[in-house]
Structures are given as structure tokens and as C-alpha cells.
Length: 441
Image (cartoon, rainbow, N blue to C red):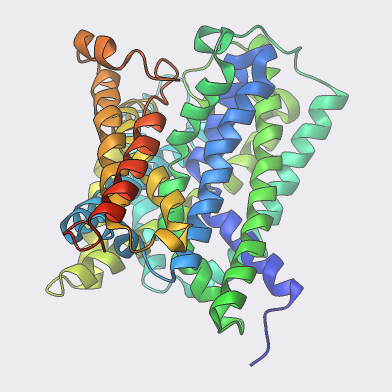
């Protein structure tokens, strides 16, 4: 069987870009740009590290291990593997990521066109989300044709729209780059780094990576090295596309201060498009974003329904998809701003754990060093869980006294040193007690 061609690599890369290029990818960069102002570039550098670099490594980790999220996390312990995998599927499924697709689509594709005086958070959002998830369910019954076409049709269309916005803003700018506000005044890079968590793409990569690997195999790659090579190349195509899009949207957001401060990135982008192209441009972007969000929603519902129906054979795929759509629709009606606010503490807890698992999985020589996984995850969790509690505004003054000495703790990355220390302790444990219960996975 022939290997995938360059055309196949580009096509798969665009498909991956389309899967990732959903709700968070559109709204967070312009919001970051508006808040960061003249500090937009260091802020975007941190954002790209977590919103592009980590998802790329997540896809590579799936290709390298030839497994799944549960297989990777089970190296710590089978029960941890199950619990962590279920938690990730709920986060990227009905609790946060999937409802957000409907909220963003409504924010940009419907809200700007509602009659004056109509409460957008009332029946309009309810009706919109009902139609949105009805379509999601219908498409999730046979998603193959949709997923096969989005990389060749929808993604280039969105890229053309965003490129046109950039050119127009350069020729006829809506305003100058504003002054940095809030945390971006002093900690732009690390604030952008933490903002990248909100895309949830590193978590989604551990699910979408399986789709990428399977697609590469369907195009002709069979042996392990070829699968890894072509998955990496396709991933680089997607990463390059995401980077260009993020930088463009971040710059546009930085020039939007003159339009007034917005509540979320969806409103920033809508205001920008309306200022640049008027209502026709806003309508075109709204349609494109709605299709992008619908595509991501279908991918997430399909992946989650497949996982849960396989985990619990008594659950039928269709019934599981219906349940996921109903839960997602309910959460979506909380509104985009509220969904983002509630997701921050959860992602603050889970993201560092996913980062450590991804990096550990890239080193096959560590595959059987179960103790390294265990102690590295323990060190990470000790800090990330308390960071998540603090993000819930729970007073933990004693934590700052206990962890304040850690490098980058105030920047939200205090888990890094405990993770590395835990890995070293696990390695020493393995060498000293090779037959111990934590020696091999």
C-alpha cells in the first residue's frame, strides 16, 4: 500500500486545523489582544506555547504511544487512567467545550442581528441552542462525510475571511494599539500562557490525535515510523495555520480598544468585523464561525459518545449522543462569559496533569517507569489542585506561605518544579527497587 502523499498531509493537516479551530480559537486571541494592548506580542507568545505547542505535542504523544488517552494515563494506575480519562471527556464534552461551541456561535452568528430590546439570554439563546444541538446530533449519526470535507472547504474559507480582516485593518485601521490592562501590564507572557489553557486544545489533542492517526493509516501509512512521521507533518501544518490565525486575531484585538471594552472575545471580534465591513461582513463571519463551531461540536459529541458507549456497553451510541447534546444545550444557556468563568478553576487543576502526561509519553524509554509517572503526577497535583481552589476564590493564605518559594508560583506555573522533582524521585525509586510495585507499569 502506498504512503500518504504531500497532498494527503496537507489535507489531514487542514482537517486537524478545522477540528481544533472552534469556539476558543476564535474568541480568546482577540480578547487577549484587547487586554494586552501594546504587550500583545509577549502575551501571544505565551498563548501560542499552550494553545499550539501543547496540542501538537499531544497529537505526537498519541502517535508515538500508538494508544489512547486512557492507555497513556493508565501508566500511573488503571484507576487513575479511567478517572482522568472520564474527567477529560466530560470537560471537552458536555461540561465546557461542547456547550461553548453553541455559545460562541450564538454570540457571533445570531446575537448581533437580534432586534433591539430583545434579551439575548432568554428565549433566543434557548431556541438557538436547541436547533444547534439538534443539527449536531443529526450530523453525529454519520460524521464521516462532514469531517472529510471540512479540511478542504470550511477551513480555507475561514482563513480567507481572517486574512481579509487583517488586510483591511492594515489599510484602514479601526484604531491604534491600546495600552495594556490588568495582569497584562506586568506579566504578559505568563498571563498569555495561562489564557491558552482556556482553549482546552491540549486536552482535545489527546482525543483528536486518535482521529489523526487513524486518518494517516487510512491514507496508506502502516508501520509505526511512517505513521509517526506523517502525523507529525500533518500536525505541523495545523500548528502553522493556528499560529498565523492566533497572531492575526491577537493583533486585531489589540487595535480594538477604541471600539470600547467588551465582555468576551466573541463581542470583540463581532465589533471589529462590524467596524471593518459593516453588517454584511458580520453576517459572513457569523455564518463561517457557526459552521466552524458546529463542526467542532460534532467532533466532540461523536468522540465522547463513542468513548462512553464503549466504556459502558449497556449505553447505546445514539442514546448517549442524545444525552450529551441535552446536557450541552443546558450548559450553553448559562452564557459564554459564565461558561468561561466556571471552566477556569477546573482547567487550572487538570491542564498541568495533562502537560506532564504528554511530555512523559514522548519518552518511550520511560514507558515502564511507572514510579516516574506516579511521583511526577503527585508533585503536579499538590500545586495544581490548590491553584484551582484559589481560582474558585477560596481563601488559602496558608498555601501561599507553603508554596510561595516555588519558581513561577505567582505566575501560575508553580507545579513545574514539583513535577520535575517527582519524576527524579520516581526514577531513583525505580533504580533502587526495580521489583517494587511502582517499578513497572
